[in-house]
Length: 440
Image (cartoon, rainbow, N blue to C red):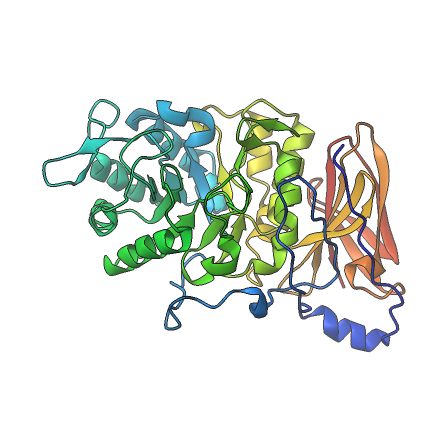
């Protein structure tokens, strides 16, 4: 397992019970966070405080800049990359679009259908970006219309460099031209990557495209995908969580995810590696600006169902975008059950917009918590170990007085577990979770 640093834990709660109950209805202020290092788990920081701290955002280079007002809850939808990569085409997108409707995903809150890299073939004589005519014979506009006609929104991909990561034309030098093209096609979302950018400054690059998107007059959610490039090997050392609040709506906190529990494959990381790098950034998240630990791998076959439940539960707890990355048109019943868990989706989409984080670490046995708008807490008992284990969430680690009685609802079993005082315990499967909602 990965090296861990034990945090200190707040103890000795001495407030009167009535005072505590009133405090439970409001999030606590968060402290400034140290950005993660280049080793997974290198900056585990544990706090019982919750909520965004405006002082940690570096001032914008343009003091007059304002947020675009979009994505007040984490975006939900589907992205083509994890399953299809560069083998994406028009028919696959249409199949997924139809399946998102028929499966109930649309009605559960998944709204964006996002075509990732490799849809482009070049530029025309006027410099306009052109879709691959073999893969997309009807054109992107027709495909966007198809998606919109089914009550969904359309997303597309580009890159801040000369080429995309798939070596298709990037938007460098064509930002306003491309933004206008995407708007004319009906785009509602742009994922903007960070390949072949040379020595370009990422804040400048993303601000330029953000301004280009706004200039179109169309509401387009902007996904900053420069992989959290504070890694020592990267030319640009900027950290998008420091400046992204008024530039985009979400920013990648790490390198790419791949469909495995833990480890590294090239420039991609496993689920727990990404979780450990993203967790210390919780204070930067909030309505309209979210930490993005990359897309869901649920249903792609590289992990167990328990591991997929863990990803879904923890992504919801840290207020991450929920972007399915499987072939929705061919998903099995277990995958559908996980992706359509509305009780956990409700945690992710909670209007308070405060990201949860780890509040207790006993080696491989952890407790995570997130405050919700109505005063409830979402709590995850998380077992990283290779065998089942009993895990306990103590009220004092959650910001509750020990004597308080709370109702407990199991969000995977979809049933009430009665009331508990002082703590809640459960047997948790290997690499699995038990996720509950606590209420007064």
